[in-house]
Image (cartoon, rainbow, N blue to C red; front, side):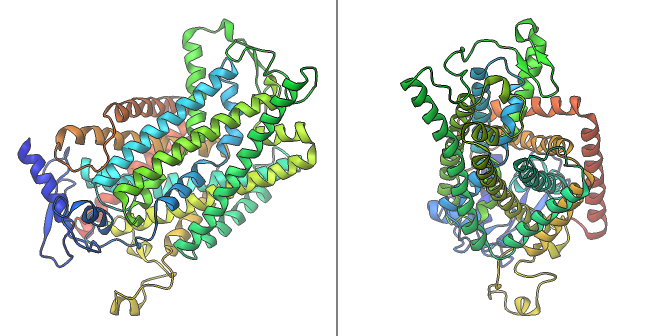
Length: 555
């Protein structure tokens, strides 16, 4: 065991050497036999080239971003992002449509508003535990592309490929399609039009929004992050407005208990007392008459909706290769952004229950717009809808930003065509860049990868619908979240001496692995069509992977 750990540390330390061919190391997957899924890792230029374990924290941080997950290349992107940008990207992605659309789904599956808030808290803690585990892997195993290099290192090359394949062709395009649909639906809802999601005009407008976001992300990394910071501000302003409205109602009714303002139930009914829930289809759930198994089914559905609202907590690791000091900045960004998001979600949902009658919350998918409209009138409801559109646009921008980098990382591994790794232009790498590799491109945006992501997302918009895409996206994501966190637990015992600048308690990844495994199994049982489509996609991915190995040789 000690010898194995020492070899593992030596493999990672070798990654920090210069890309002169003098240093290479075999990165053997822990759970694969020799020669299957193993990858040869050659040193990438680390911008300073210090060896891990010898050069201290600074050298370690440079090494972590200087290597492309073992592809034999130095990092594609410049290390020009800091903790503030990482914080903004996580906040921009996570605070999207979920906090404004999921409350109804959660409320209809819980016996009381108090339990609903507990579900929101549990969902946030699970997201935080998953993000903390990802931060451990992100600071211990160098590479671009989020979970790709981790799964490759732990389980073998084919698992890294399948993760990249799933994210590039399914998860991220489906996410962008969902958010584009929600953006247009928010506009329609503000105009009083509902149920138009399947019309071709609605779909085409969603594609227009998608293309505009892709163009914005194609300018440069700095331009994207600056625009993203603006959207982060609109997110906090929107949530702050909802919370402030709730606080005002509380003070008004404390000052005059007989005054009719807000929902009127928050100070008359017990927050944890059972009450009958009115569902969108007009049916009523009588919680006092449900058995334990039925109650468990409803609570799991509520948790699933909360996890969708927190979706995006993992995205900070996708830009770890662009952080100037990832060992310090990545955990800092995660441990500030996720608690901030949990606080925002809890206070916003508490405000919904103050602003609306409790039998209304479960029947609306636009709870924020409904709450503001009831309190201040239709004009302010339209203003709220505009801000929510900006919130969704921010999530679109952040997810499109990450989607392009996923494709670049996969192309750098020779898993996807090399043209997707080109940054700064459309098409193949220009001759001037090949002649002078030190010359930086005019733009560092992965334009080819963004185009691919936009085209796939447009296809999902035309062929799918919101609910089907939501389940499909969740199954794909949490399958690999489960495998990645399970891999982190395995590494704790297989590679004791692997240097981990950030190491949370082992109980944290264990809890997340158990819950994420449950989410995947439950989702597959209740959505077999999407599960079979995903299995078919994986089978196709394995066929593509082995065809590449046969005709091109191992990467």
